[in-house]
Length: 198
Image (cartoon, rainbow, N blue to C red; front, side):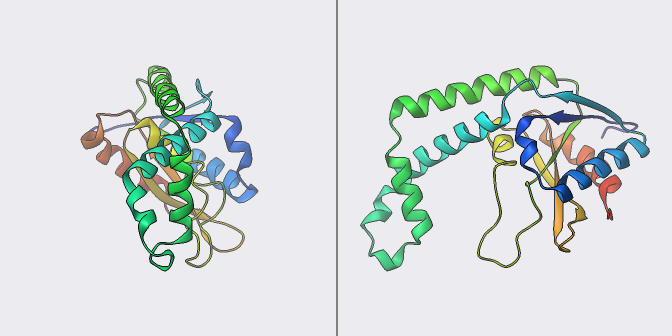
């Protein structure tokens, strides 16, 4: 396991403008906590477009969902949730060329971003644009985490604070693909510095 200060990238991207004020506050305090713990922070503009990556990830996911789960549409209506039924239909409407284009752009984004942050131990990023939702009806807005799903590296979400509504706010830690084992100790070290924020 790596010991000593970690190099953490704090990427700036227009997608993060969608974050509410509580999330922006916890993001800033998270970066400050990491710096105070002795870690090196590199604040820099992302070399890729995270909003476009979110869109491409969603199209690729829906395309695959449509092809894999199409047989479920033959079930009686009351045996399949409406959200899943709609998602399968959306996926089936995406053609092969659109899917292949999304996959190619995802691969380009992956290559570009990880060349930019090749020597990073981790990237700090908000897990969602708002606090966790209240209740169980919705799991929250996936637009901040879906690009990291597409990028394919390890992802850990750490509780980092609370919003003015009292609900939790998470920060995401990620790294390049293929470092999953080593990243567990990196994430554990960084998570310890992010706990118990206000």
